[in-house]
Amino acid sequence: MAIRQVLRMGHPTLLQVAQPVTEFNTAVLDALIADMFDTMAEYQGVGLAAPQIGVSLRIIIFGFERNARYPEAEPVPTTVLINPDIEYPVAEQQEGWEGCLSVPGMRGLVPRYTQIRYRGVDQAGTLIDRSVNGFHARVVQHEVDHLDGILYPQRVEDMTQFGFIEELGLRGGA
Image (cartoon, rainbow, N blue to C red):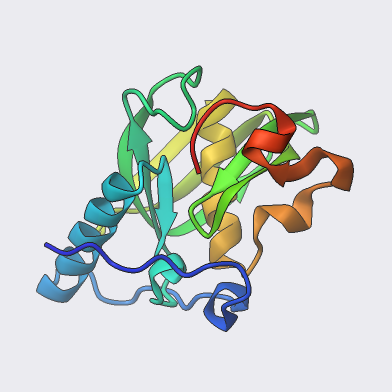
């Protein structure tokens, strides 16, 4: 379909709480999701939220087999998740390096819950209900944050662990 411009940190749309999707299985929704996948692929992302391309709706996509930006991450199934809700069955959190297409060239050490249960629907309105852990859980939490107007630097607890990839001595691209 089309590769969209990814909004960068500082754009007001990224700070808004996105609106729920109310109509499913439409040509407009399908086209938006196709554009999101094209955009995510172009920028080698592992996930993308609709607000990142200027659409303030509660839609995220994610998934990959292998990703150059996160070479050691386990595969995550390709998913369209609309109007997501997350539960945290355990209090345990773990820090991990995160990047974002809206914060290019940078990484930060972010604490996230190690296990989550997420629910939502796909573009046809079919229920999705999964319990996941590891990188999969991290990706979903990161993308859902976008729907609530939160960017990962806001979650970094130690700002000495936030910076440009090269200066931090990390692998992976923007």
